Length: 412
View 1 (tube, rainbow, N blue to C red):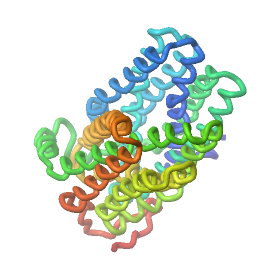
View 2: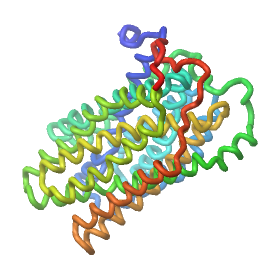
View 3: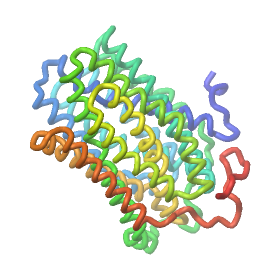
View 4: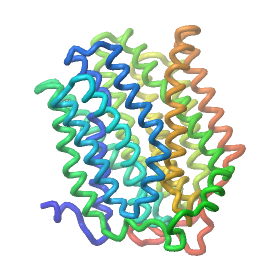
């Protein structure tokens, strides 16, 4: 049956299913952890400590995980090891919800997540090649969004009708088809680096660390999440106070709507970046942040929040495709693609961590509208940095860029 689902000739279908099932499994480690630990009589302080520990481990692991994936030639093996870590973390949560096992599960999840992301990006690069990477990443984002949306609904129903513990058994189970799909990606695709770059390439690493384009883009990434991360929590809290029991419907729509937008737009983002260049796509995604903040500030209420989330789907589609694509541009010809992803992932975590505290502090001191205006201003600053300082990074290919199906892309 699996051999019928995944077609070996190109491996694209197999990689689609990898992204779908991994997104399914990762959904189980979202808000379901807090719900489950609450049913196990954990205090809010204990739950907060466990979640914070996982976040800190993920933050610290970003760059080492990227370097690890660069160093291991067989990307399928390292992705499989990370999936086994997710299985172990999910089973620990389900079977043994005591303090030490839960903390260990959070640490395992933090490390495994940091390894899985660059592993899938490396498999994508090896499978599609640099010229067709944008479209391949668009497909990754589409199937990831579909997996997230479906898993959120199924796991919510599982937790409501069975138990919160069942969510984590389901999470572990979803990793099994992900493992099978990883090994159905063609065997040659894990040889990402060209032969000339085998071994330590310290000169390339020094050039990467001093690359102005990387530093500018990392600043833009941090500003993106500094603006974005706090918007939904602030808006959700406001809607909950206004809408009462109807808030659950609104929050559910706020989760589903952006996933639909991401699934719809991501392939277009990848193709457009290949055809017309990276810079104007980046501007489109970053400019959506102040638009979203403005909607939330001047149109408070339930349905404007859903509209704002639809706009956030555009920025999420652009960010999800462009971050690994820019990393591939900046590290072409080196073995530091995943190290670059880890560095950019660190910028993501720093921006998101500051955002929630900053947004909450402004909301408490000056009101929710002031918080949205401030977050939108930060997003506008990120857009301005892209406009003023971020150069185009699409390689000047001697040949016409190729689609992942082998057809020629249109050059704009």
